[in-house]
Image (cartoon, rainbow, N blue to C red):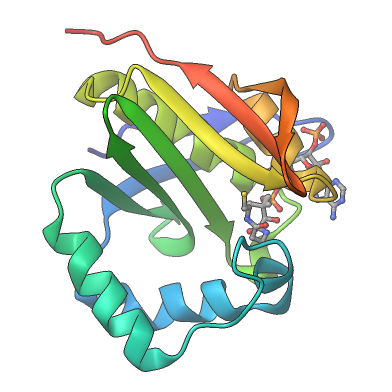
Length: 168
Ligand SMILES: CC(C)(COP(=O)(O)OP(=O)(O)OC[C@H]1O[C@@H](n2cnc3c(N)ncnc32)[C@H](O)[C@@H]1OP(=O)(O)O)[C@@H](O)C(=O)NCCC(=O)NCCS
């Protein structure tokens, strides 16, 4: 853990983040980021989650070895989260950056760092993400991290994929 993802995205200053595993202490910030209006707008469910739902969801995810949930930090401050749910060799990726930190290159850098970790872990040869077709920042951030957009859509969502080569 802790290998930095760094990126110089168009016009951004060099942005570096490190990933650490999320814990129950991160419940508050994860709920805030999940229920932020833009995150809700572009989510698959299109609705906010309640604190109770969130608590149950987080304990289940933290207990499940097929879920990797990381908090991205810059200089010790939490700036976002990235999660990969692995099923049958495919990791489904979800990412969110703290509202006050968006548009500074963190989304791209967090995804780059996640790809490094997934290369190291080697449990998902394919990564996949669904990004709302109007969510330009998300689509661009995934593309910056090496994902390519497939021709097909799933409803309102663009499908992006990335192939992982295990380093071991
Ligand atoms: C989507 C999200 C993760 C992107 O992270 P970010 O830190 O804001 O994005 P970045 O600063 O890394 O920018 C990524 C690219 O999008 C572009 N971008 C950033 N904000 C943008 C905006 N509001 N509109 C259009 N493009 C935007 C950037 O210019 C950059 O493109 P470039 O590399 O060609 O210059 C973040 O905005 C977020 O958490 N949104 C709410 C939750 C969400 O939508 N999650 C994704 C679900 S799949």
